[in-house]
Length: 69
Image (cartoon, rainbow, N blue to C red; front, side, top):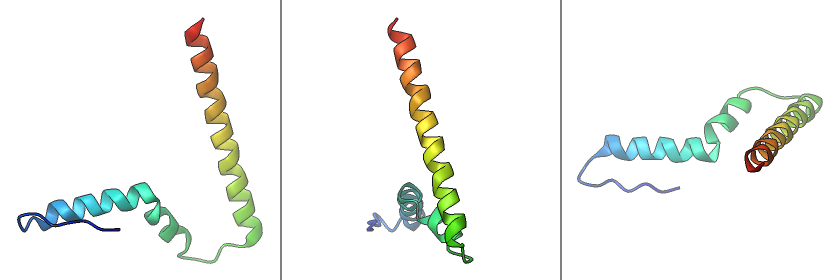
């Protein structure tokens, strides 16, 4: 990951770096890795995330179908 500093404006470069890191999910991963997570907890967390994604996709699909009627 690379951010260029223009006109000695370090604050702007830091903001851009933080935004890129946020988009990549680095902060979330760092928070998860702070302590050990049992494999069963990891599976349940990933399963819950998959369910949330599926429900969100279904809601969006229903919204789109309803809007076209």
